[in-house]
Structure formats: structure tokens, C-alpha cells
Amino acid sequence: MKFLLASALLCSASAFAPVTPSLPTIKSSLDAYKVAVVGGGPSGACAAEVFAQEPNIETILFERKFDNAKPCGGAIPLCMIGEFDLPETVVDRKVRKMKMISPSDMEVDIGDTLKPDEYIGMCRREILDGYLRDRAVEYGAQPVNALVTAIDVPSDHKVNKDSKYNIHYQEFTPGSSVGTAKNMEVDLIVGADGANSRVAKAMDAGEYNFAIAFQERIKISDEKMEFYEEMAEMYVGDDVSPDFYGWVFPKYDHVGVGTGTVVNRPAIKQYQKAIRERAGSKIEGGKIIKVEAHPIPEHPRPRRVQGRIALVGDAAGYVTKCSGEGIYFAAKSGRMAAENIVKLMEGGSRLPSQEEIESTYIKDYDRAYGPTYAVLDILQKVFYSSNGAREAFVELCKSKYVQQVTFDSYLYKKVQGNNPLDDLKLLGETIGCLIKGYSIAKPDQEFSNPVESLKRI
Ligand SMILES: Cc1cc2nc3c(=O)[nH]c(=O)nc-3n(C[C@H](O)[C@H](O)[C@H](O)COP(=O)(O)OP(=O)(O)OC[C@H]3O[C@@H](n4cnc5c(N)ncnc54)[C@H](O)[C@@H]3O)c2cc1C
View (cartoon, helix red, strand yellow):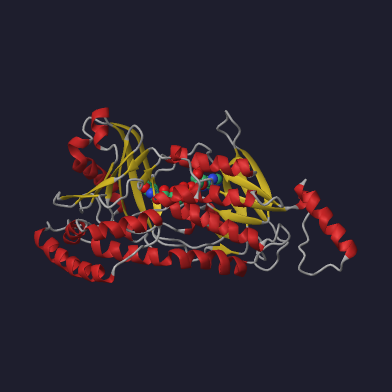
């Protein structure tokens, strides 16, 4: 209806005035440009809801499992609640205290610098993703419950805007586990299908290195759960990971206990056992109710846009080092890509070129978050590389200034009110902590995985 009204207005305007070349030619609703978003996680759902709000674009949301529970710690920054207009019901627990635990089991409590209304949100992904997906569908995205299996990418897709992408998929109907093979032609694709992205493969986006992360959902007694009411724990040490951290994150009736590694992926189960042992009596007697594992990208793919195919979220490779955070960046990149593409499509009247998508979405994203990725990459290299450095890292967390800057940058995704004098003091403290850390730390265990290491990029 809105489309008809818009067309009528355009037609009547043209009867009285010369048509200006800048006026968009809106396609009829029957041949409206079709955008496929593949994957309904935070990146896909947040992209789909933007496209769906443009009446002259047809938005299809492909998701292989609409009740998917993505393996994840589920920690989200406070700013995501406001920016994405999320109801607090998607948050199981509001974490206001954290324990940082060093290889020698030195514990440092952080969180005193938080204001009463500040917290880290702990979510179950089936709840968070379900909410975002439903919202995209309410806005008008057409859900297709299907596994995308392949995409035919025409060889001239970068130059010929009339060329279409042919998506092959297995569609599932309720009550049946066997899919029906189908295909659909579309004009533009957003690849939001996570770390094992088939869209990335089809568009020849190139590979990225990845961590493997493992998590067990453990149901502990109500008494033990009280300790984790508002508390998350972060363990460092080469026993729990040679290059990452182990965590205990509280959920509404259980805790998520997990770890990850890039450099020694074959030993992930050994590291998982170690994190369970480190948490010890706090989770003793707990029942493992779910075991989950998934790759985490280490850096962006070499090519994130090809023709009219753009990658977002994990498919693009947007997880930060050091913290392993990807939910916010997935949602943000999905939204940023879609907003820029919708703008370029000028009310559904034209298709954007690869150069246009790169000079808007990719440029904006890299400018906004490039520095965050760079800083966290350096921090991971400095502080997660040996037990000495890990001891120093935990010791440094005693500093209220470090706590303030860390929480501000995590919760609000911007570093606020840094003080040059405090920065200088911090540099001195870091050096002191590193010297002390190396003097008390137990040496790291040697490991070797020559076969698997060769697979790394
Ligand atoms: C163990 C673990 C713990 C983590 N903890 C945290 C944390 O605490 N905080 C944080 O911020 N990040 C965390 N991350 C990272 C975070 O999970 C990801 O960065 C985030 O999920 C990326 O969102 P996405 O939408 O890009 O992809 P995904 O969440 O992976 O969503 C992809 C969607 O696409 C669907 N899909 C995939 N392939 C197809 C296909 N071929 N056809 C149709 N549908 C398809 C999937 O079903 C899925 O719903 C963790 C990751 C792991 C593995």
C-alpha cells in the first residue's frame, strides 16, 4: 500500500514537473529487490530488521534452527541493552563483581568502581537470539527455516547488477527432520552464518585463524548458586589455557564453565578439565546439563565484501582478542552493514556496488572498532603469553584506575576520561607487576601439536 502511494505520488509529480534524474525509480512490489540474510544470530537478526523496515526491499531471513542455542558465554556489555532496545528479560544475571584468579590462585576482586546501575549482562543465547529474530520477523523479514547448502555466484556479479545469486537450501517443516531441497534467486546477500560460514566460502572470502572454545552448562545447588548471584570468575594460567582464559559465568539456574585456545586446540578437553578443577568446591556436585563447543574467529577475513555479498559478525571475523567478545560486534556490524546498504539502495530503487559497500559499511566499521581490536590484540600478546605475565595481569587488576578504564571500555565500547598522569603511573605499575609476576610464577608447560599447527593460517 505504502509502495502504491509512493508510486502514485511520483507519477503525479512527473505530470507537472520535468523528471529530475535524481528521483529514484521504485520497482513494483512484485519485482522488488530481494535481500537474503543467511543466519539468524545477533548479526543476521540485527541486519534483517533494518532491511525489513524498508518497504521496497523484500527481506528473507534464512536460519537453519530457529530455536538455536549458540555455544557461548553469553556476556554482553551494558550499552547493548540501550542501543538495541533490549528488554531486561533477556538478561539472566546482572554481574557487578568479578574475581580475577591468577595461575598461583591469587584472587583479585573487581567491580567496586561500577555505579549502582552498571552491570555486565549474562544471557542464554537461545533467549537473546530468539528475541532478536522474532523482532526482525515482526518488522517484516520473511523467515525461512532452512540450511543454506550452496550459493551460485555468477562470474560477472561484480560488474553486472542484473546478475542474481542462486541460493540452494534444505527447508525444514515443523515435525520433520528431513529437509526439502529448494533454491531462490536473490539480488544481495548478507552472510551472517557464523564461524563456519557457507556464504564466506561461496564468495571466496578467504580463511581466518580460529580458537576453539568449549563450555559446559553446570547446574549447581541453590546454595552454591548464591555465590554466583552477581559474580563472574575469570581464571588465567597455562593449565586452563595457553593463550586465553577460563570462565565461570552465572546464568539463571546454572553456571557456564568454559575455556578456549588457538595454539593448542587438540588439548581443549584437558583445559576444560582444569578449569573445572580450578573452580573446585564452588561448583562441586554440579550436574553437567549441556556441553557445547564452537570455533571463534581470530581476525577478519581477507575479503568481507565481494560484489553484492557482505559478511557480518563471526562470518566476517569480528571477535576481539583477549576478551573473546563477539555478540555486540555481531549485532553492531549487522546493523551497520544493513543501514549503509539500505541507504545505498535509495528506497529500493537501485543496487549498490562492491566499492560502495566497502567505502561505507567496511570503512565505518573499521574506523569505529579497528583501534579496539588492535589494543586487545596487544594486551593478549603481552598478558596471556606466560604464567609470569598472567600473574602481572591479575596483580594489575588491583588498580582502581585499571578497573575503571577496563569497565568503561567494555561496558560502553569507548574509553572514557583517561588521565595522562594515571596512564604514566600505570606504565610504571605494569613494569613492576611484570617483574614481580615473572619472579613468582611457575614455568609454563611445554606442548607440541605439530600436525594440527600446520593447519593454522
Ligand atoms: C564457547 C564460546 C563462548 C563465547 N562467549 C562469548 C561471550 O561471553 N560474550 C561475547 O560477546 N561473545 C562470546 N562468544 C562469541 C560469540 O558467540 C559470537 O561472536 C557471536 O555468536 C557471533 O554472532 P553471529 O550472529 O555473527 O553468529 P552466530 O551467533 O554463530 O549465528 C549464526 C547463525 O547462523 C545460523 N547458520 C549457520 N549456518 C547456516 C546455514 N548454512 N544456513 C542457515 N543458517 C545457518 C546458525 O544456526 C546461527 O543461528 C563466545 C563464543 C564461544 C564459541
